[in-house]
Image (tube, rainbow, N blue to C red; front, side, top):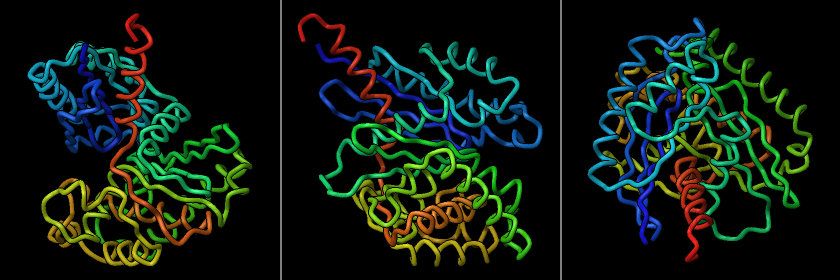
Length: 315
């Protein structure tokens, strides 16, 4: 029997949906900028405006799930909800709206699902593969060595760094220095917590996930309409990352938005994400990052389908 499952990700900057069948056919892949983390870093609370934006999108997704005949689903929440005092109430309402289970992922769980989704369709490589998943409130690093996953969730994200250090407009020298210091401090914590990261410096295949990397790939390809084939597994050099970081940092949000490939809703926070990506590449000693459009949503969907196969006596 063919089953249709839905994976929903309520991230700090976007709310996303993936609907896929047990035959590995993707029916819908949707993304809306909802900025759930707006103000959370300062207040520790999800705001009414951010909640309404997110609930509205979840209602829209429930309609799509009905139209596509979804039989089972899972909604996950990440950094913004982890940091919010009203996170439990958000999950309760998300369950009610979507009609599926909703859970709060730890940083390690987020990294594990992202790794599973991003690496499923990669060609073999003699190098270990590390993912960097740059979200709105956190950034996950994960690598598997000798069958063991080593992961760390950094308190770095494009929204968090924008609100704390860079600001939304042209980046000032003071903002630049504060942003770099914030990122390097978190990287120091990651390397201290996971000594295995130091063992792959200079010999790792780096795979970049989520909105920062996807938007960078679109800008690099100069495409105005999303084309998965043009951005999935696109190889970007560190010099390209640095050029776009510095160029966008020197522009106003409106000028950034006018560039072919920029995604509306990311123009104010993309420079912060590129600061993170460049710093991670520098710390790992790599000159290239491979983009992946497969990410945590794909990892969630595969876990749901795996559960279905395990419970079906005919498989």
